[in-house]
Amino acid sequence: MTEKKDGIGSMIKLGLTLAIFAVASCTVLALVNNVTSPVIKENNIRKANEAMKAVFPEAENFDIPDAVCGTTKSGKTTIDSIHLAKKGGETVGAVVQISGPTYDRSTIMVGLDMKGTVTGMQFLENTDTPGFGQKASDPTFKVKSGHTFYGQFTNADSFRGFVAGETFDAISGATITSVGVATMMDDACEFMKECLNIGGIK
Image (cartoon, one colour):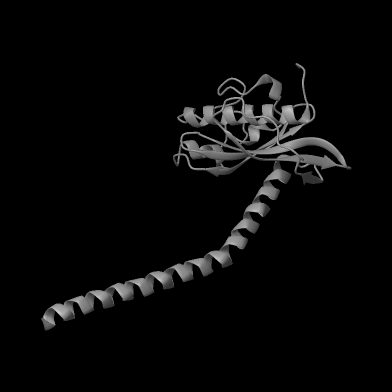
């Protein structure tokens, strides 16, 4: 009888010990999250601002429009954010952050001026295969034109569209990544042209 009581007592003690550890762990995690969350948020904002300036160097500042318009043409991508590029108080274009499937998944920042010309493109995230799809965001990797993969999009005419191997250099051995980027570029530019009311055929 004593052994049974001792066994139950040990189980209760173990349960209480585990509960105390669980509460302590949750408390520590909550405290760590409260400390790191603002820092992570601030770093993400800084990174986004740097990327916007990199893809639209002419802009003096960036504003968030009153309303986000439209959906992506392909339906495969997601517009994460859009900012209007401003200079001298006037809108001179826009910058979009867009995410979509490549070999795995990527997020890019694209700038477009009022003529429908790409002012720049940068990768914010690229989780594709190292040595293949990740060449797209590698600053040391050059395509046939001598530019980085993402650098070749600067000054591209969005009205021509983006077709891997035709309107821009694809990455050898990373066709899926190249096609995924083409879709994101098309969707981003079409979305911005709609928001900026840019039309016509060049």
